[in-house]
Amino acid sequence: MGLVYFLFLMFGKEFFVNRYRLLGWKFKDVTPKQAIRINTMNVCGFDVVERLRSLNVELEKIPFLQYGYWVVSSKFSVGATLEYLLGYYSIQEAAAQIPAALFTDLKEKLVLDACAAPGGKTVQLADLMGNTGIIVALDVNKRRLEALMNQLERCHVKNTVVYQLDARRVSRLGLKFDRILLDVPCSGNFATDKEWFKRRTLLDVKRNAKLQRQILAEAAKALRDEGEMVYATCSLEPEENELNIDWAVRNLGLETVEIDCYGEEAPTEVFGKKLDDSVRRCRRIWPGETQGFFVCKLRKRG
Figure 1 (cartoon, rainbow, N blue to C red):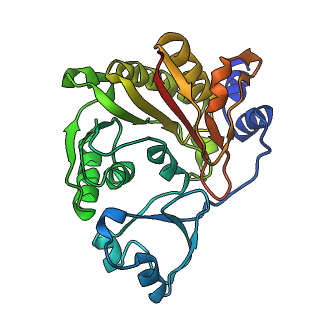
Figure 2 (tube, rainbow, N blue to C red):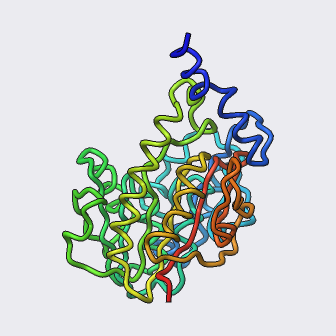
């Protein structure tokens, strides 16, 4: 009976839904809209949106993204057009387009994409950089790196070096980066996995949170004093989000930076635990038109 009760406390839809309620969100089933992002570096002298509309792909501008569009309707896969194969646009979830856009002054910079595969955000970084500077893109999984390299080739990315390397070993590169993107491995959320509540327990969440802290600690060592770091997950669990940022602020010499993006202010009290007040600068995105997401911008404390 004790084991059954223990599992009940750490597993199942009711457990997680109650946590979301305590964090200020009432659960609802959602189906995020499909979205694309225009790769502006590959589009010159023509309007790719109009080209897609001429193919009867109905698009709607996403108000909180500069180059993002909802796919309202299409009679075929938007991943099967000539325009897609030529790298004019990428299929990228709307919330996932936010982290790379939070950096300032990316051109000519040395950028680390620490958990890069399958490559959507790497391509976005290259686009924002105008194919200038250097991106060092890492992933620990060889098969995922193949997907990343396919994305880079399709989108004509020329400024990226790809390594098979665990992000917890970044210091082995011997480099200091101007910008670091940490789209870290996480527990995901129910909006993109209908079986999520059956697959996840609090033990999974805590295991992922530990891995994320190891990546954060290593990345902090590789960040230039004047550099910027963006931390993101598609998890709704505070252990992987607010609690990790609170830990980073208290232990890694980092501070949060104000950001202006879609989402709501992150809570500074989680399940009775008071966090550093600066955690409020992070943004929590609850599932709706987009999947659930969390994003925070950091820099070294001056």
